[in-house]
Every structure is written in C-alpha cells, then in structure tokens.
Length: 272
Image (cartoon, rainbow, N blue to C red; front, side):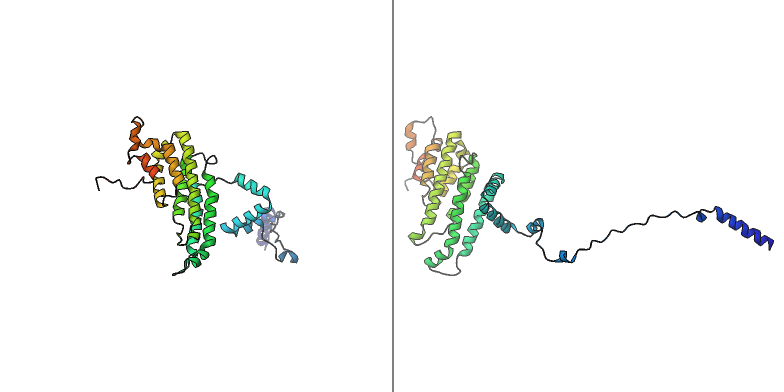
C-alpha cells in the first residue's frame, strides 16, 4: 500500500510540471467571412451594368448604338471622327463587298421582268452606289497623299462598278453610268496629282496605266476622262523622249493607244 501511494505521489508530481497541466493559452477563434445577405428589395430586377450590356452586343448593334449617340450629340460624333483610325483600303473594299452581296441577294429567283427586278433591288443598288460615293473622296488627294493607296482603292471600286447590273431599259442604266463618270473623275484627279509629284513614273512602274486601260475597255469606254488624264500626264513615257516628234504618229505607240482607247487590245500585224 505504501509503494502504491509513493507511485501515485510521483505521478502527481510529474503531472504538476507537465506542460499539459499549465494554464491553457486561449486560442484565437478564426472568424468566418460573414455571408452578405441582400435585403429583399435588392433581389428585384435591375438593368445590367454598362460593361455587361456591351458584352452582349454584336458589331452591328454596337455600330447602331454609337451612330444614334453621335447623331444626338454632334460633339461626341466629332470626337469619334477625330479619334477613329483612318479606314484601310481593305476595310473599305470589304464594306463595299458586303453591300454588293446584299445587292446580289436582293435579286428575285427565276425569270422576272426587268421592271419587277429593278424595283426589287433598287434599294440595295442605291445603298451600294451611295457607299462608293462616300468612300471615294477618302482616298483622293489632298486627303490621301500616297498615290498607290489611292490607285488601289480606285482599282477595287471600279471592279465593283463593273459588276453592277446592266439593265435593258435605258432609264435604269443611269446608276451605273453615273458611277462610271464619278470614278473616272477620281482616276483623273489622282493621275494628275501623281504626275505633278513624280512625273507619272509610278503610274507605269506599278502598271496602273495598263490597269486603267483594261477598266476603260470593260466599261465600254466610259472612263474617257481618266484615259485623257493618263495620256496627257504620263503618255510621254510611252515613246522615246529623244525621238523626233513624228514618232508619236505611230498608231501602235502607247500614247496613241491611250488616246484611242485601244491600249491593251491585241496589236494587228500584217495586211490582214
């Protein structure tokens, strides 16, 4: 009994010096994030924040919203004009291609009378021609100073004009004829300005004189003003400048071909 008592006393002594018997250090209770409880009135419907709303709009819808705002607030519209980057030739021609696609889709299926077809596509046709008229001045001097850029646009726009419908009725043909007249004046302006700055060399080195001749042939000679400008401003490069003046009488010279509208056509050789 005595030994058991001593053993119990020894165990009590060890427990008295054990760390577990020391006063417990109060542990800091981890605080849980309080869950935000919305009031009942916050759970009702409300409009989307502006960034979320813009994420839901496609390109056409964004363009429409921006256009409406600019029309209501002209000062904002001017800021957009000043801050937006200038359209590239590729972007402008892409827009014209889209209008051209809408024109093709507007044609009725199957055989229809000329009058019915015209009135079916009249709106899309007018939209395409208006777009060409609006884009063209953007690529003319003095707004556009780089001749190559101007000519690239005019080349693409002229191809689109070639694809405009050829109506049987004379009263419907004025759309295409007027488009040819306008683009011809644009070609003439660019050619004249290019000749002032570089002597017309760029017109030949880039092959633009040949491109214009082909366009004129495809248009049925309706680019006469542009062809005259090419002949007057850069036609001297078609002959040897050191040759006598009588050399220009050669019917096969580039100068005479440009003036006659036959440049790019096969040259006839022999008595036949």
